[in-house]
Structure formats: C-alpha cells, structure tokens
Image 1: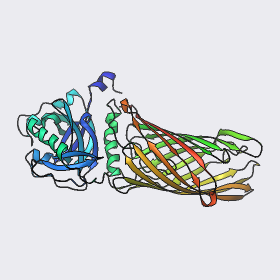
Image 2 (image 1 turned 60 degrees about the vertical axis):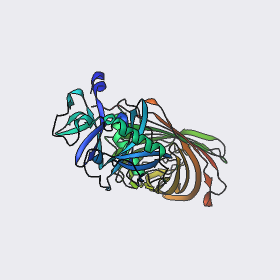
Image 3 (image 1 turned 45 degrees about the vertical axis):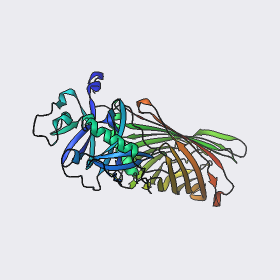
Image 4 (image 1 turned 90 degrees about the vertical axis):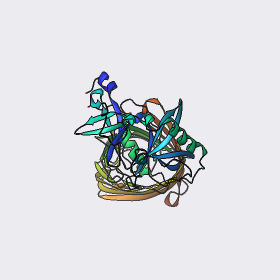
Length: 445
C-alpha cells in the first residue's frame, strides 16, 4: 500500500491518441469527455479550430490537435472523442474541446516516472511538452496544455467561444459520459476534486445498466409508503466495483412495516447479495446492458409476513438506451424463484415471481432530471402445502431527481416520486423518497 507521501507525489494523467501517438494531460485540467458529434464550423477562424459545439447551452470551441501539431486534420471515427479542458489565459479560465482519435485510460506517474522532453525526435514542438512519462513498456508524451496555444491563438479561441452563434445541441452520448467517469474515477478517488458531470445511475424503480465506476462506491437509501394501507419499506444498498466497472458486487438490506388485521409487523425483510456484469457500455455506444444475478437470503420473519422463508435466486436484465441528447430510457425484465417458500402457518411451496419495467428520463439539465417509470410485477405467495396464489401489480411513477457535487468527490442525489396504481393496482397511491451518496474510496495498491 502506498504511503501518504508516495500518494501525494503521484500525478494522474488522462491519455489519448492523436495521429497514432499517445499523449497525456493532467486530469486536473479535464472537465469531461464527450462522444464526437456535429461540430459547427465558424468562418474566418484559424485552421486548427475545427468549430464549436453546444455544451448545455454554452458555446465551446473545439481545437484539432493534429492540425495544431502540423499534421493532417483528424479523421472522425467511432472512437473519436472531444476532451473538454479548462486552461488559463491572463488569469481567466477558458473552456475548450480537444479532438482525440481515442481516449485510452488514466495513468499515475511519480516524479521518477517523468523524464525531460528530448531536444529532438518528437512529433510535436518540445515547448508543448511537460515531459515524457514512462509507464510499463511505453512512453507517453505529457502535454503542458497551457502551452499548446500561443497567447494570440488562445485569445482567438476565446473569441470564438464568445462570439460564435449557438448551434443546435448535438448528441451527448450517455455511454460516452459513462466512459468519462470510468476513466477519471480512479484518479479522482485518490484525492483529486471530482469533475462535475450529469446524473447517471440513479434510477428509482427501474434498474439502470451502468455499473459503478472504478474507485467509486455508492450508498443508496430508498423509502416508500403506501397511502391507503400505511405499509412502508426502507432499503439500503451498497454498490462496489470489484476490481473495476466490468464487475460489480452489491447488497440490499430491507426494513419494512406491514399492517395486518389486528397489529402491524415491523422488521428486517429478506436480504439480497448481487453480482452484475457490464456486458455492453464499457467502450461507448448508445446502449448499455448489465445482467444481474442475486442470491436472496431468508432473513425476514415468515410468521410476521416479512420474509419468504426460503432461499431464492433472481435474474434481472437491465438495458439502458440513449435516445438523443436529452432523453434516456431504462428497460428491465426479471424473474425470481424461491426454492421452498413458507407461509405463516408453516406450509411450503416453490414460488416464481416476475417483473417488467420501463422508464423515460428527461435530462432537463445536467443536475436535474425528470422521469416517468412504469413497472409491472407478479408475486406468488404460499397458500397451502405445495400450492401458491399469484397477484399482479402495475404502477406508473412520475418523479424528479437532482444532484449536488461537493469537494472531495462526494455527489449527493436526492429524489422524490409518486407511484400511482393502474389496472390491477387501481386506486393505490404511494410516496417514494430516494437518496444516493456516491464518493471515491481508497483502494489498496
């Protein structure tokens, strides 16, 4: 494990490719990473300025580093990205985008891993370089981003961002934002301030398909209360990427209160241990898919109606789909089998339960989302020895969530929704409250 001094000496760099060469810039300069989309050309601007993009209502100039380095313009491919950075000009910050052929990873370098730039033999002017970083068996050219543009060129870039007309918003891929967090989470988890970004994996009733980013843990509290019966359910979940975003382990602990004919029963329900695999969405694209398998542990009391009485297995197939720059949809199908469920009288039977869900999320602002979720479920209860009885439920739930980013990388996402029963659940109403705390954790080296 690294000592405090060793950790303090480490610097983090985001690496990316331009014209078959790998470059690195300090993550402290990086604000976010976007999937390459339409860049609007601005007349009478330097050749190295590809154009401008609309970044949530703000005009951001985009610089083609290949042209700035004296090479042919970058060709746009499926892996092309725009790295949004912030530089200083006369003490004033300038936000601009850098075109990269591909974004690679975040690396950590100590002082001993950085060598002075050579006087010749590099594809770019050594004045642009902070040094050469040595990682594994390769070298990375470390850019001093504030030196890439001369003072006059930086002023031209700033003028483009100030004077250009705002083009129509482009498609900011959700999967690209996920990629941005994956690349930056490890570095941010080691003490750097977390870059601001849009809300992502904070669905309420419908499971989304984004695993936790490397180095980031999420704590989720959810509370729902039925208006008519007064029954309530509180769940606490933790999600851990181990060792990275591809694999996620989590657990869910429920506490609930059920109102019977005479008395109310309050206690712990059945716990769940979960594993989820990021099958799609790690490398970009509009679709993310992360199947989950769960072991249900019979920790709830069957006598009080708080548990199934037997171990169970569950599978869920969450899929998330980007539908443009302002809309995302989550879809989920699940099935649960309990081997030997029991009722309060001690009768046993195997039970099956199913669920289908779908949501539309409007990304009204990066930190404010409106959503409408629809979920259908079929539950089965033991009704006698070897027999079960099924019941259906169908709810439509409008809601809102918003985010607060604090120093140190903590993101707080509260939310509220109002599930409304339709069809077999007609006349039922509930209140749903949500709170997510997400922050970096320090992993062993």
